[in-house]
Image 1 (cartoon, rainbow, N blue to C red):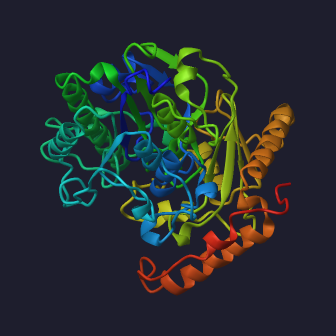
Image 2 (image 1 turned 180 degrees about the vertical axis):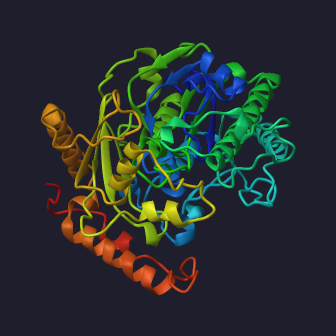
Length: 482
């Protein structure tokens, strides 16, 4: 696109919280999402999309830098003092240089926050927050967006609209929405998590209520664009930061944590009602936005999905994800790769168990895991708790990842190819986890931080604490992946 001769499009990027593809357009049967489904019918839906790391700050940093967490440095949550490496270029910076007015409504959740410069930034936690006593007031947010559009005038704008749903707590109602909330009696089990109970169904029902609130907010925004005559010249992207917070979901490398929705709508520039089977990733979002604005993105590892949407190809593309930490007590580096059919997880920390399992078992604010589990699920949870070096899942036959096929002779070729691809990706992206000394150094630092700050009911480091890892994790000089 030649920005000198073509009117630059507006770009609206809607990012939900903790939302997997539990939507009508993705086949959900126990809840209705008419506004998001309408968006899908007017554009392209990507069937298989991974976040880069299944917790907020790292995943959001990938959206706004186009890099994997081990490349950008935000490998855990900001409130636990994780932060970007120095010198990382971000999307709002590049959009402003291209003449765009930039705005963000809702949380940024990346540090250092001052590196992200917006013309409009609104994040009133009392009106648009996550706590049990905070409002999720989409009407107030929409008023902010309308003022932002007014102030942009004739200038092109890029807006990131961060919805607080469906983050915990999963509120049955907030600001009167939904007016007819779903309850546990209305729904069946959420198959993806592999467990079921009456208490858990109530949690699932409230997760669905969060999605219903988000769905209504999407519709209100689309109607605002229509009223303002902006609909036809606006690329709308709908996605999530990472998957849902249920067992083997958020904070893990299993599909409920990694899978996110992705819809792209741009009238006249993209096909309508098309499903794209090529696997996509959170690292593709920034190249897609830059491409829409006519900007180069060859320096980024992802690809523009605008071109893919017009000519679907590369159905066997590999996508990658990682786990590092959210807060120090659940630091446990792992890596994953998948194609359309199979997925490999690598867990190098064979000297310790996976702390995310105990996190779900012990924290009362998380959805409950029933005491009695089906035998297959109990075995799979055992693998989650004490992972072997490799896990391999045939997602066509075993979508809930109950049977680890690593080492099985029928999957030897698939495992060999995915192991080689994972090793190559880690080397190409400078992944610290492929260097035994740097991996060990990071774990030693995380253990020391836990011992100093997370004992005796302390919840996080002091405000003046700074991690040392940004100084020693930026390059590798040796291999570790077997």
